[in-house]
Length: 135
Image 1 (cartoon, rainbow, N blue to C red):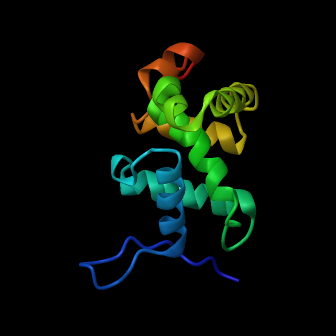
Image 2 (tube, helix red, strand yellow):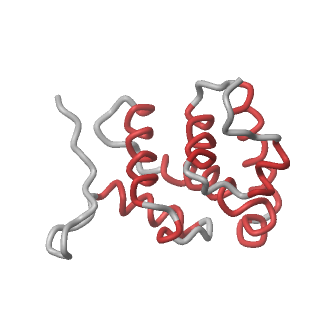
Image 3 (cartoon, rainbow, N blue to C red):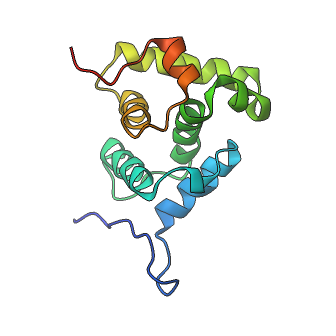
């Protein structure tokens, strides 16, 4: 079976695909406005989700987890924590730490995307000593 492609919409006539709409809603729930994330980055996220899920469509509950770690990376701990709470900050930081240990993991790919797309918070870069340079 071939995978259904994500669609951005065109001239307001053709709608955005459901996966992008679900990602936008999940980003809003963690207080990251979807307009702050380029469409190319969102397309990459949903494609990574599809690759990780091994299915045509990621399960609906997967969008929340993706938005939490990506939102933390983009907003930084202070802004993310004001809306989502200290426990969400700790959980996201634990996921980033685990991603740094498991460099090929799904979370590592999301952190790397935020870093390479230059969306990542300077505070997150500082906290975890992140660098886009290769060894």
